[in-house]
Amino acid sequence: MFVFFTLFFLSAKSLIAEKITNYEVTVQMNKNGTLTVNEVIDYEFDGAAKHGIYRDIPLRSKKNGVDIYKSYIKMNSIKRNGISEEYSTKLFDEGIRYRVGSADRFVENGVNRYEFNYVIYNAVFEKNGIYQVYFNAIGQFWQVPIEKATVNIKFANGEPVLKNEIRQLDIFTGEYGQSGKDYITNLNNGTVEIKTNKVLEAYNGLSFRLNLKTDNISPTFWDKLQTLYYAHPLIAVGPIIIIILAIYGFVTWYIFGRDVDKKAIVPEFNIPKDISAMYAAYINGEREPKEILTIGVLSLLSKGYVEANDEEGNGRNVEYTLSDSRKSKPELAEEEKIVFNALSDNGYIFKKERSLYDASNKILKSFEREYKKKVYKDNNIFNIVFIVGMIIVFMISSTASGGTAGISDGISGAVSLVMVAIFFGIVLNTIFSIINNIYGNNSKFLKIIKWIAVLFFSLIYGVLNFIIIGIIMAMYAVYSKIIGRYTVDGMRKKEYLDGMKMYIKTAEANQIMKFNDVDELVAYFKGILPYAVALGVKNEVVKLMKNTIKLYDFDESTYSYINRGVHFNSYNNFFLSDMISRGYNNAYNEIAEERFSTLRENSRNSSGSGFGGGGFSSGGGFSGGGSGGGGGGSW
Image (tube, rainbow, N blue to C red; front, side):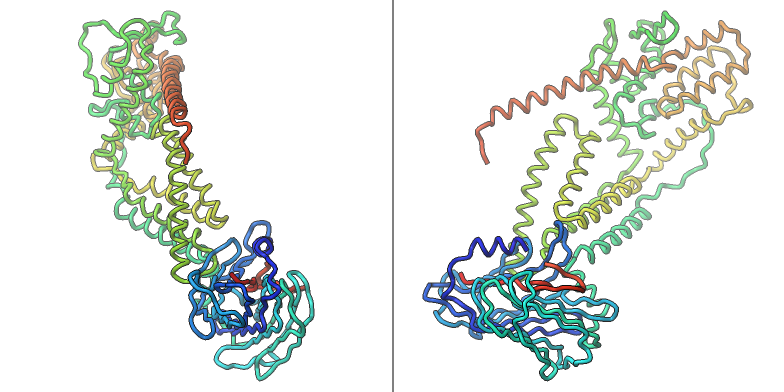
């Protein structure tokens, strides 16, 4: 209620000459659990020119920043002297203001009768078969005195309020928080009548708390759902959106996301002819450019385009050079040619760090195009429905103020939503553009930042919005992983690679491929080792190689010959991958610094540019407690 004090007291002036001569409120308790309220206000203006009055109605009450009560107002009509009057609305943090009158004309001096008729949702509560109406009938924030006030409480359709239905009736008068007793009450022909017995000074009002055991209030399930939607739209709509998205996700996955018929995986020991080791790694899920580069160099090593000179024999100080041998070599895949062309032919082959960095990104982009075209259809178009779901949740949250007053309020709410969305869109787009320039569009860091930004933005609209958005985001993350489907050709490639892994992992003595001589064994393992790294089974293929060598009972010199032939030490430690990683990281840092420098320069060049309580209540009540209330004044 702090907002009310601030709102009213800051604008309060000396209004002694103005007053409300009579304030009559009729509260009709409806079968569906709503209240139809009719307020008749005889407002006496002084000689000053005024356009009309305003009426503030609180719609929520907060405790520690969290809504503990929230209602919804449906305004049916506002009249002045029996004729419909022009009005506008404005939402504020805890309620809604109805400004009655026109800025183009003034009202007559003297008494003008204003009549407000509205329905209030979520103002009737039930506990153990007892219905409670805790209502602030005369608000405590009128800036003028009220000479006489009457509150009539009745059922709809002329049904009387019987004495044996009333379990408890408490009435409170005075300023907000007080528990005055300046009233008289009686039950007259089935209507509870409450009248003040003295003038209510400015900022004084009247609240009542009525507990009833009655059949005249009996909301159906749909009535309760409607009330829930009006008061807490996300509680009502959020689960429905989640269920719809879940059904949509399952149906679209079943139709478009299920993989084509899989064949039984059988061991494959032959090296694939149409899949490079780098592309095998990509199909297997590898997206790290440094790892792709390392596998590319290992492929060049296995095909004889790169030579490894390991004088110490421990793999810790291997010198890698481009081969000058004129011997016939296997043909390179296009991506292997890109890596080869990025290597230096003079001295240290990894010194062209920028070229290696560019080569890795070029290869990954090429793989992405090829992968999506021929191997795996990601079906990302279906993900948009989850984005739409999140947008709908944001729209409901941003417009769920708890009150409505017709078209003007709807338009202003929509305009506010658009303006907020545009503002945050510009800010987030700027931030993402900066991060994208530094880290690249495919950066996992950028994706994480985007998700964090969405979650943070959702938290602005409340904890419930945060939870629902979080659930939809989790569904989106899972769905985006499973909606994709392998093509027939892609599935065959994946099955073949899985067959290679199966052979490497499970081959026993009687299943190990037989070789005619040592050179054939060396050629096989030299070719398969890059694929083993690509498929994440390097240790297993090393074990397989050792088991194969044991079958032939080679002597120590032959064993050493095999190790040198397959470049075993290049696989047995991280020396090669460390060199490639250092070069890549150096280039990455250099590029990031260049982009930072450009951003700083652009920034310097552009400097100077500008641009109350709710729920079922027991115990002590007070004046101002319950739903309704508020106040008003003239303007």
